[in-house]
Image (cartoon, rainbow, N blue to C red; front, side, top):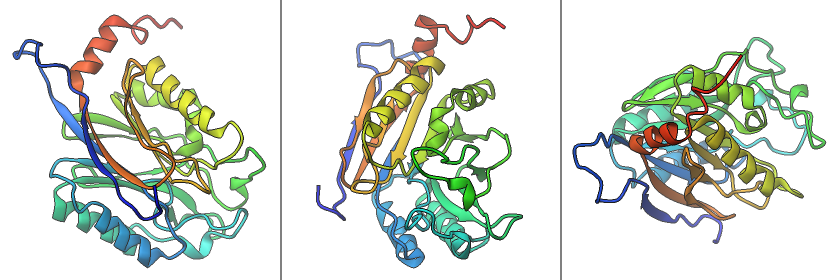
Length: 280
């Protein structure tokens, strides 16, 4: 797919029409926006607004990690691009969410206690208002994110979006199953994971495997949204509590919708009651 092209698909993951209509079929529509963040914050704010133009009221719209402004060259200083929560990015995000009647999750670099090492933060605005500071910094695969960013405190964040409990994770957090389990213990039915999953050998396989594992082992939906190739991996996806792929984008930019059906989660936890079977 050519850079800048937006693909708008809709896919309904609800159960087939042969089911009893008396069953509870509460749903949440999620929109995955796989778009590359530039080094120009103003351009990214404009794109954020444009990329939700077709979003329907009530949707949960998920953008990638650091959509406010990309990381730039590996190891570069991010402190000049840190913003406050009342700054231009969050103000634009909140206004866009309110104007469209949607909930938006997007990443930014947030000013913190240490001016030289800001936070990598997810911001939620719309039906819920929350922030999550990335806990696990990317000190791996030759990178040393902790040299330029501060880690968030151990504080699992779960918000209510139109009746669904949504837990927040960021990119490298995916490799730490204890955070996903803590979110589920706090009530999460959906794990939302914005990412900038750096491309490289085996990285796409790791992405897919770990997203599936977090969904299956916790019997939750996982909504994983990354920036596209060439720098990052793309392949944003929604995986069901039983490990089924509801939607998956390719390597380029795209915009895709899936419907999360709570009945799928209830059935998964009935068939595979692994959370209830835990010991210790």
